[in-house]
Length: 435
Image 1: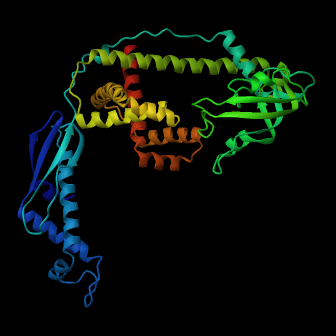
Image 2: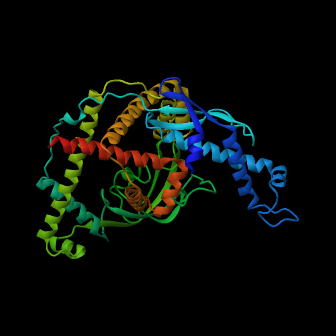
């Protein structure tokens, strides 16, 4: 953007409500005329007028025919110039900048319009570099190593048909019918819950069909049982939540897990030896514990940071947005069905208060983190964000580009950025404790 246009943009800053300012923008008549001519030439380059080659029609003809398009182009240029100049003003720590009112552009007149700017509050960070925290560090125990190995034994073990009565942890092959009629658009899982000519039930908690464990422990191949399943209100499939379903079930096979020996487990995992496998498990647990210990340290640093920083004003617009977000989080965690929704609505005022309290804490922390990050020049770059999104995409079964596009549309990428910035900033303080 040309410096002469930026220099022509005049700004008058007025204090507004807490953490806000109004910036009045004025651009003189001569500059508007010059930029209008440029906008006219830009429009002329992509329109066709009979009798003239593209880009060669007289300015007067272009202006008479395409005045609205020229005004749009001129407004875009002038507003962009004003926004750039405001962004370059280092006297303001700007959080957001939005047009305040309409922009009415004329091609040959001085232009005035305004922005409403939200600025960061004054924050006394105190001596944040002196924060000291102590967190009890956990050590890996032999019991935990044995439990993790037992998990692998279970994971890689085989099931085989057995005679006799079924016991907990057995896998039963069953067929069943019920009086539940699945909706036509129900998921395959819901339809299979209603009726199956062959399905597998694992006798463990949580139950796939509520009440099945009680009637199937002790059952044998060929047994037929009737029982009633009371699906809980928070059942993972809404179509079955709170439903009472009567089942007629037949046991087709009883299968039991055979526990692997050390040698069989090593062979399954293709490990060099059982001792090396055990050492690998211990090392993995130590890394997990180190990560958990570090997470505790960062949490403790954040808590101490909240204590030493004095209270400060919170931007109302940001607080309102954060409160709405916290309210949605509450609703997502509490509303699982229609009855929950009615209960949530009935207590909405109480939930709004809770959401606002949570929002104040979250916004306060984010502004503190933001200021420290700015002082210490802590940043999160695009490569780091892309790496994090790749990890998330792998976990959720998305392609990285698809997940990023989705997050950009719903705004959650900003949350990823701040979470990463927060972690890096708290880690900076934690690392400083050891110096």
